[in-house]
Length: 467
Image 1 (cartoon, one colour):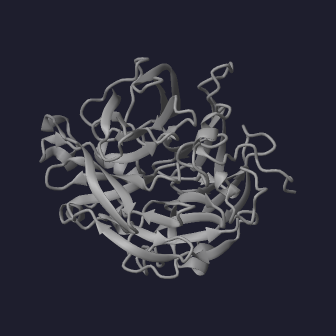
Image 2 (cartoon, helix red, strand yellow):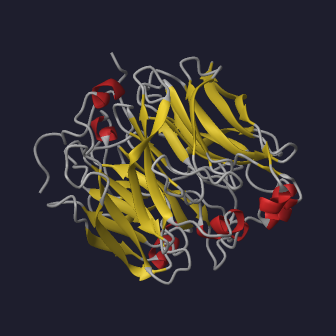
């Protein structure tokens, strides 16, 4: 039964969310790289006052093998406070966990014991493709009308029969309702999406089709500039494509989109994995002005020269390590943008107070294709900074180290033992790896997205400006 008052973890504005109680638990997606074990959601104690701080408390296993957990999200968030919401009394209670390779979706209940999530429902891929025409579910966002899930594939065994898109699930029954788009315009590829709810628009990005990622990166497609490189803007209420911005074919793989959290600010950021002309990675700022959308490259991260002898086969011919921006995340005050460079092993902190001129404010190094930088505790860290999650108050940044199982093998052929670490953030910027926080998931599991109890910086959508 739903309560007769809003969930206390829902907040009207980003500033009110920043003042909420700090997180005590983190949920982390674990994947079995060789698909010999069921994937899992790990529950991590992140309460510094707890005797089990920094330890894995429990692990909820998926019912099948081979799901390839990637991104996941809550069934409800602060978007439920929208005046347009038909469900103001929802609870942030259920984790929606897609399997990107299997196309299954799992619903886990975090009540009554949030340290022991239990499987409530599994939606099989046949139902998703029958009702939507889509496969390979990816990003999960809770909106005022339900649960929105982006996909990377269409129908058919290889996911190329029809374009991928977004579909909606009922946020109470978890029934798949159908595809979201009424008019998709020229959109043919998909990756991430987010929106500005009061302004009533959505932005989406592009990666590639399943044959371009499921068995590893396809070098010929990358060098041929055949991965995604465009942003799409949508009329959210009309579910209609309104504008495309092409970042240039050489800017391959425009992935995470992060709009400003304050809905009065009409801008956001997208990270581009690699420029095929020079191996740079880049950050772009997009904004709306006079009803039209624009985008401009506002920061670049250069490649780093390296001895070919220490590079994987894929990179030997280049004699350099590309940064490979694989995730970005924006603090709730819209001040700091965190940029994960999975190739060079950097987590960069940019001050984006002026979103058109990001300024590097902090930088830590750990892992990396060539550097293999160790954690401050002295423990090895395979892979590099990957999925990043910021606490609501902006003082802690958690991240993991696995990108995608078949890509992990190409860039880090010695394997990536799953790990989760944390940086502490200074009051006015700067960041430092916490030598006491290191969660080791073991060599049999990779670690991907992190969700924080009560919400985080890549979960909630706010309907009211910060005062």
